[in-house]
Every structure is written in structure tokens, then in C-alpha cells.
Length: 367
Image (cartoon, rainbow, N blue to C red; front, side, top):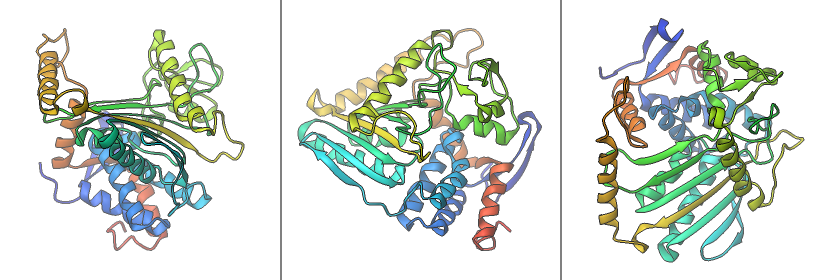
């Protein structure tokens, strides 16, 4: 179907009711609410677009469900609209950037753009960022590099903010969810893209499960007593996420620890929670100019051939087939662009409440 207006969907299989909304309308709603809360037009559009793009790709935990919390952070002074970013240390190939508590979407986009410009001259470049708010879906930044004919590597942590993940063998949080994203230029229709948390799951997926009234799979969470649980509400009662890998969780725990060092200690603010509770997301991004290693056109062609080689493997029993990294998210994006984005009723009600509070319900058709 091609969606022409909001559609109410009662989906008993998912134990939740949804509104199905066109992405353009959802972006307008979120941008208008963020602007009403004090964001500039550019900041509001960047955050709204980033969140809706996350929904389109199937990363609903980083989608519009986060808009109300961003607005609460603005009210509390934890996100500073219009904050000027500054370069505190720089060389021809590197930069350390202070985001001054600005929107992570805005700060990290500018940091990646700077890294790309440096790599056009020096072929390899890296930027580290501190004192910024949540950066959303990490793939947004690695894909910037891929679009410029470069390999982009981006990692992020929660800096000196609340931790969410227990190190392997522990029951207390000492790590962030610490995602990693790598995008590679190719001739493929869908991007060749890795985008993953080093925890068993992103923390936002617990909020999503709560909003949808769903249980979570075993292996995601332990409760305050260190016992496995499938109730996402235990997270707010002292529970912690587990590292990626299950019985081999030392792998995810190790990756997360390295991300903490790259995003925390390398930028100087350090690790561990701030007593104020103010979020301080760190980021580290590196770009590699493919043309410095070999002709870009040949590389892109051979990446596509490698992806097809992977896909040619016979599927295992019960498998729908083999997909290269980034392909499934692209397929979701195509479907949701045409059919609309499912927004759980709890999130839709939160957006509607904000619209009413700002006197925008009629303007946004959310009365």
C-alpha cells in the first residue's frame, strides 16, 4: 500500500497498537516540536531527520521514541541548543572537538565532515568528540564517508555519564552500549554497512519493549540481583544489560572497553558517571580514502562482487537466505518509505501531548 494519511493499526501479534505514519509527516511533527522546545530550525531538522531515518531502517530504538526524552533534556539544560562546537586540539590529520553539550546529531555530523575534508588531503584522518548529547543512529556518520568514496569507522560511548552494561562476568554496569559502525563504498544498491552495539542490544530497545508492552528475549538483561530476566521494566529497577556474545560475552565486553578508551580517555574527559547525571556522549571517527590504496571504481566493483559471493551460499535450514551487512536495513527502509512507519501508541500519545502543551495540536493535526 502507499500511505496517504495516518492509519490506525491494531496488531495483537505485537501486543501493541500502532499509528502508521508517512515519514515526511513524522519528520515535520518532530522538527516542529523540537523547534518549539528551543532548538534552532537547523538543529530541529537534523535531529528529526536522524530519528525518522533510524525508524526507516528498522532501528526504532533510535527513532522518534527518543524525541520526548531529547526535549526533556533540553528543559533540564542537559542539551544546549545553539551550542558552538570548538576544536581544542588539531593537526593536519586529527582533531579533538568539544561539543559544549550541543545536539550530538549536529556535532558529530560536523566532525565527520571535517574528517572527510582532512582525508581528501592526507588520505587518512580521525576526529574525536566529547561533551555532546546522544548521537542517534551511528550509521548516519559512517555513511557520510562511504558517500565520499571513503571507508568510515565510527564508535561512540556514553562518556562520563550513566553506564548501562555489565562487563563480562559482572552484575554492575561499568560500560556503555558502545556501538560500532563501519561503512564501505561499493556499487551495491544497498550500502555495505556494519552498525551494531557491543552490548546484547541497544538500551533503547528496552524502552521500546516497555512502550509496546512486550517481553524481551533471554540474554539481554539481568535484574538487580544478577538473575536473567525477560521483563524490560527490571532495567529501571537496577537491572543491567549484558555484553554482546552470550556465553562468549567477553568478546562484546572487550570491544566495549576499547570503545570506552577511544571515546573517553583519548578525548580526556575520562570514563565513569558524572555526579550531575548530565549526559556526555563521546565519539571517535576515522576515515580512509580508498583512492590512496587502489582505484576507487575497481574497489567498489569488487566489494559488490564479494557481497554477491557471500549471498551465493546455500541457506541453512530455516534461513530466509544470506544477506550482506546493511542489506536488511535497506530493505526495511524501502518498505517503510512506501508503506509508512509504525509508531507505537505510547510514543504517538507522547508526541500528541507535547503538541498540545506547545499549542501546536491543530497545526500538526494531532488534536
